[in-house]
Length: 226
Image 1 (tube, one colour):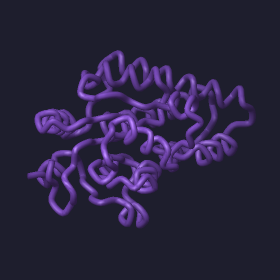
Image 2 (cartoon, one colour; image 1 turned 90 degrees about the horizontal axis):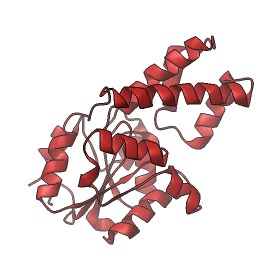
Image 3 (tube, one colour; image 1 turned 180 degrees about the vertical axis):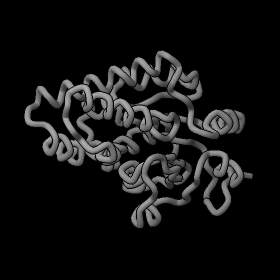
């Protein structure tokens, strides 16, 4: 695949999942608000935006700020996850704009595709199968692969380097798609060109330096291929 202002030719794609392929970050945000209200936690609703694409340290800081005990934190996380799982089963989880068209186009062009997600293995499977897109990908990587492979999570390069290794494609012929600063930094650290498609958070100055291209959605990206 040839892309305007990108060299050399692209032979493989690595996607983030949450907030990039699917509109899950918005559901997690809504679930966080419900879970907090049920537990009378009094957390400001805009505080949850800090969790979108957050690093492990950022998440730990958030939980330390708002939860007195690990048990209280774990109940909040479980309730959030249960709600998003339920909504996924109910068909409320949607593909992001342009995703279906992009996957069809990339498949038509014979590109190899994979998912590199920080989410749990069962959640990644649940999302990919329920949204009907699992079979587009050669494989997916999840937090399970990070744990079992003693990898460092995003923004470290590890999961992208692992994906590149499994695809058997040189890094210069790969393209990553990410929605968050953490993910964009991970791809950049791996030496892989990255397209940022922002979700809940708009690009910051570092994102603008790290990203090869910033698109409002995947429709916009498709207009750049030839």
